[in-house]
Length: 420
Image: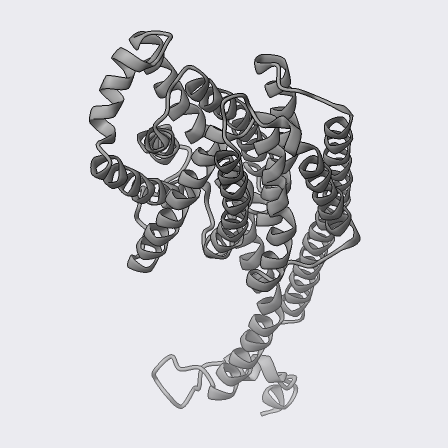
C-alpha cells in the first residue's frame, strides 16, 4: 500500500496513451485521438497557402507564354527570325512574279496559305524528340476547330487583298501603306483583348501612322509605267483594306490564344486556319480557271521560263508560311499589338529591299517615312524591354515570398512535432 502511494501521477499524454488495465483490448483514449486530429488540421491549414502557391508556380512554369519558362526566349527569337525572313522574302518574290508577267491574283493568294503541310514539323517534332509528353491535337476541341476555320476564311480574304495590292503598287509603297493597320490594331486590341494604351505604344502608333501619311503624299508620282490610274487606286485601296482586315485578325487570334498554353497548340490552330484559307483560294482558282491558267502561265507567259516559274511559286509558298508562323508565334508569346508592330517595323526593311532589288524610287519623303517607322519601332522595343524586366522582377519576388512561406510553415510544423 505504501509503495502504491509513492508512485508519481501520470501526466495527461501518458495517461491518454496508457492502455486501460480493466480492458483486455489494446485501446487508446478517445481524448488523445481528438487532440491529434486538431493538431493535424492546424498543420494542414498552415501548409495550405504554400501548397497553393507551389501549384500556381508549377502551372506558371509550364505555360510557355510566361517569361520565366525556359522555352520562352528561344521560341521568341526563332519566331521573330521566321517573321523577318518570311516577310522580306515573300514580298520580294511576289513582286518578282508580277514583274515577269505573272498575272494571276488567285495564284498569288494561293501560295500564301498552301504551305500548311510545313506546320506538321513544329506540331509533331517536339513529341518525336521527347521534348514534350503531350500528344498532338489531344487538347483540340470543337470550339477551337470552329474558331480556327472562320479565322482562316478571314485570313484568305486578307491574302487576296494583299495580292491585288502587290500587283498594282511598288513594293516600297505597298509595304509602307500596310503600316496604316497599326492604329486600328491598337484600337481593336483595346476593345477586344483590353490592351492597355501606354505612352510607349501610343508614341509608336503615331510615328508609324505619320510614316504612312508622308508616303501617301508622295505616292501619286510613283505609278508604274503602263498602269492606269484606276488600277493604281485599286491597288492602293486593296492594300489599305488588307491592313484593316489584318488589324482585326491579330487581336481576334490573341483572344483565342489566351486559352492556349503551348506553342504546339498554336501551330495546330494555325494549321486549321491555313487549310481554310487554302480551300477558299482553291475554290476561287477553280472558279476562275486558275489551275489551268497556272500551267499555261508557266509555259507561255512567264518570261523567265517554266523552271524559274515553279521555283518562284514554291519558294513563295515556303516564305509565306514562315511569315505566318512567325506572326502566330509572336502574338502567342507577346501580344497582337507587339506582333503588328514587329511586322510594321519589317516593312521598312521591305522598302529597302524593293529599292535595292527592283530599283524602286527612294526620294526624300520616303526616306523620312522610313526613319519615322524605325524610330517608332525602336521606342516600342525599349518600352517592351523595360516592361519585361519589371515582370521578371515581380515573378522573382513572388517566388521568393512563396519559398519563405514554405520555410515558415515547415518550421512551425517541426516545432509542433517537437512539442509533442
